[in-house]
Image (cartoon, rainbow, N blue to C red; front, side, top):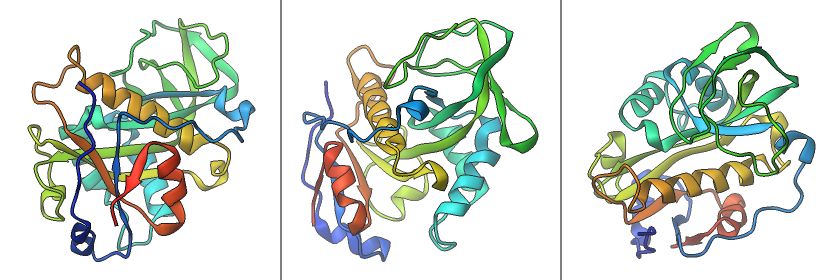
Length: 240
């Protein structure tokens, strides 16, 4: 079943000591993505699960994007990837020129290993999901590129600061910690495309055919006021 939209008390926001409205996603209402896409970038993006070897790159983006008191530590990102891997997904930008040596790539949504190399470029044989604007792609090739954004979440039984510190595999709430894109790729549709992929992946996980033994009821997050419009466009609603 799809994720239900349930009311979350607006007082929860105070627990995070941030003046940010609480948002909740209504999974019944998938809003259209930003139409100002940079097709040259989006056509080169694939979405996949974050792997252990991706954590240094994710931490690099995290620490450059959030204030020090808000950014997750590398160990925290490692914890989330290890314990909540299905809920940690990234946008992987394929290098111009595409691919190199041949290997097998399964056309799925989860799994796969990445191996980092100098400069943050990654050679990956991971499973992939179709880009928002798909282009012909040889799925038997090793793709060269880099992670340019990610979304990570953990499950909890209550949306409190304490509960969000760990992952409860039976929690009915999926709390999003980070929605982040590398600065030079912002305002080009990457975040909207990444969010669309993420929410679709969560719906698949939560479906009758999905892998979750205990289904989720809702997806929630804390957002800055200047980002409210972005989240509303992507199917969330402000809770106060």
